[in-house]
Image 1: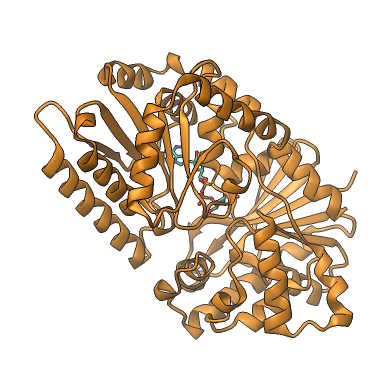
Image 2: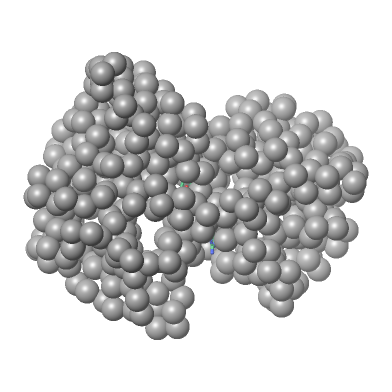
Length: 449
Ligand code: GDG
């Protein structure tokens, strides 16, 4: 059996109790290692004054972790700069928020080069190398220039935009050339795959005779560990926080949103839609509560401070104008909760509100569905711009830019009768169980091998 080498920006080393950090990518990759002995290489999350040339190695069972520190300049230029201030907004169609700097791009290439130089000596020729996400697009090109003969695959977790959108970003041609060094490129949806193929043809001028090379671009929609999440949700009443929330609700219905605090997730827009719902349906005031969990992320990037301000502004306005003594329309928390608490809160909620402006997949949507009580499930309202909308056919699909449409979907979800809720849920849970995270990882790796 070949060894699996995973490379991602962040590496989640399990703690002494064997627990890793929660979160979609981490859970997914942990799952991939079930089938292979392996090495996981990436940034330690630490910043050190001197550049690292060799990683720190941590052994844990069948998996070896190789951790690189970044210098303050690396973190600024590679991570906060090109990856999160230029690539992330452009790939999410937010061209106006994208801030390109040549120095950041040089820093991005430098970190990819130093990661490749540190990784190459740790690999054997028959290892399968699987690189993850937009921070590391040039890695295969760097590894090839060091002579690595291995099969190297790349999975892009975020949307791949239309060619004319990506073309606004300087440096695109260089990035696109580097993506051709992979043997397999996975994206979330068929739309992303079409966009990437078109981008290569239009921006790089891939000619008709070379079109066969585009077959290496394939969609592999990522899943969750569905069965495990279903079980965790069933047992979640053991959590004091879940029981307290349930008691606090009384007969009120719960609407839930769970997102990293990121402008791509559409949190202020969603609050605006909920406000519209309360204004148009005054009888519902005091009968529903909207809980928004939004752990802070990337707080060093100025656009994230700005989205935090817009959320606080919307929250203050709505709770101030529509709240009453004894009823707060929106509960907003920015701390992260353990996974089993999250599962329990999803299960308590009559409505899952998942309305990103753009999202590669969106695992929260899948977790919400998996957590429901099969006999009395809640309703999911899902943005048409999340990759998950291509799979979750029982969702109420909305355009997150249309407050009225989202407000009406909230009303319809709250009034939907039980048999329709059960029917909709049943159309989703089977595919979620079949196309879970193991199916995703195995499908990609089989194709790569
Ligand atoms: C990227 C792409 C793609 C959130 N709050 C808490 C918490 N979370 C967990 C959720 C979920 C994960 O974080 C978020 O995953 P998403 O898919 O929703 O979003 P991104 O972080 O933007 O992920 C996305 C994904 O990669 C995988 O390919 O789907 O499109 O943007 O698992 O549950 N977990 C815990 N406490 C929290 O408070 N424990």
